[in-house]
Amino acid sequence: MNPALRISKNWMAFLAIAALFLTARLFGAEHTDSHTVANAVDHAAHGHDHGSASESVSQFSLKQIAHSYLTAYMFTLSLCVGCLFLSLAHHLFDAGWSASIRRVTDTISSLLFPWMTLLVLPIIGFAWHGDLYGWFFTDPASDHSLDVKKVLFNRETFSVLLPGVIALLGLVAGTLRKWSVAQDKDGAAHWTSKSRKLAAGGIFLFAFGTTLVCFFLMKSLQHQFFSTMYGVYYFAGSVWVTLITLYILTMYLSQPGKPLEKVYFKRQQQDLAVLFFAFTVFYAYIHFSQYFLIWNAALPEETFWYVLREVGSWKWVGMTIIFGHFFVPFLLLLNQDIKRNMAVMVPVAVWTWLMHYLDMTYNVMPVLHPAGLKLTFWDPLLWVALVSVLGALFWRKYQTAAPYPLRDPRLKEAVTHHEVPTSAVRSASASTH
Amino acid sequence: MSALPLKTHGMLAEFGTPADIFEAAMRCRDAGFSKWDVHTPFPIHGMDEAMGLRKSPVGWFTFCGGFTGFFTGMTMIWYMNGFDYPLVVGGKPLFTPLYAFPVSYELTILLSAFGTLFGMFFLNRLPKFYNPLFKNLRFRKATDDRYFIVIESADPKFSVEATRAFLTDSCHATAVELVED
Image 1 (cartoon, rainbow over the protein chains, first blue to last red):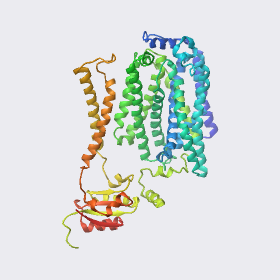
Image 2 (image 1 turned 90 degrees about the vertical axis):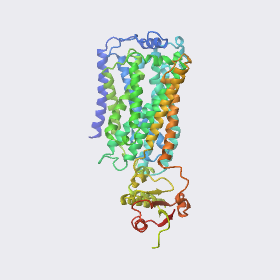
Image 3 (image 1 turned 180 degrees about the vertical axis):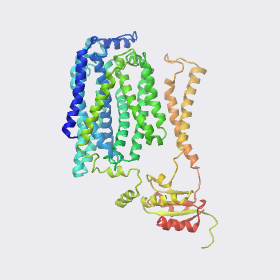
Image 4 (image 1 turned 120 degrees about the horizontal axis):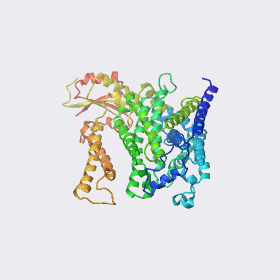
């Protein structure tokens, strides 16, 4: 397929989404009062009547689209952020085994700029229009919890800082990728040491940036909420879903005749699965800690968040997350042979995607539908649309450079990683003697 | 060949590089030896496959330890707080898995670790206070820069002549010697 056609296909995907928005706008039924959401949250916060508020959100309303879009955006952002973390970690730990899949993580994370930065703009639009965040239209003087957070939660800071931080993370990712591509040409080792230095600063930027972005996008839906775990919580789930995505993606890319065939082997795949398993536990640890501390302290300004999520079917969504997000993959992947068994891992990957999407829904949707889980056709539609756009952009960008860092000093280590081609071992040991 | 020494431990073969011992291990595996081992200064990735080792069953000890720990924790807290001496703390329920979780979780980890450690000891028949190889001067290099294969004389396929020839000719060992018990 020629590049022009590819580009036009992406734009067509964009146009299709835009058209859907427009359609919804034209058929847009009654708009609920923009303060209804805030009121519902307020009710829950003060412990009375939290089930009954704002039942009448039409599925064609902009509110519904905004929340569905936000959920889908948080999901796709997870993949970019997770890949950025893996690239940074690769450089920080001077890892060997992951060199052969680093071009993939570099490419996905570099989509943060400009693409994910552009895709966040509709959310800012929805916010200004009054479809997402109650605090956009609340006077801090009348709301103490907003008053103490107004440094961050005000329209101007939100509109500038949010895309700014996403773009900044994207620039770090893009720079890592650019240097790696430059190394393909001259093979100079200084690109690697430069990348390590960038990663050393980048990891701090990543930690604060990701936290800030998910505070802005998801946590501020209920601005009264406090949780220092929230950023780590999003991060843990993001890396979790990213690892299984990479597992499947790299498995595909290393099939006979595909670009990673000669540099990516079963052992690396096992390592990805081991990391995935680790993050299954880490996510559970983080989410449990958040819940447990809030439960134990029992402060109303924190508990309301979970109280709202124990109403109606949200309680069962929560249970599904406990068992489906943690226990099922945890118990399945305890066995080391399972980690290479495609008949198990492919369903696990599909399940992981569903669970992470459900987790995002659990964070976003109770604000709009306090009575219980309510899916509309927007949810799968926008989810598939955003993931497809990201996938298409990845594929286009991935093909503009070599499929793996051709002259990375660690590549040999990655290729011989745990692997037993005797000739490789022999030449490796011969070169060290 | 003179008479055998009263008791022999086995045949010790020395190798100079990881690649050499790797190939030799594969040959020993294919020759069908069962009581033999490889000693290297550092772990060599893929050696377990080259030696034809089964997956270690130590994970089952870990799992049983963890399982016991988790349910011990839960039962203990239920018994103490919810049953034997019911006491309301902070307006919380007398028993819920929620506050019992941190302790159960710690016990899971503790007993998994014990299961792993003692399971490994058990499977390796440790502690063992003496091994004839400790007396062998050549073998001391196993912690430095040499790689060793030991085929024990208890192996049904062991014979002084044939095993020595096998290690020297087929496996290309740099030195082979008989270790006395």
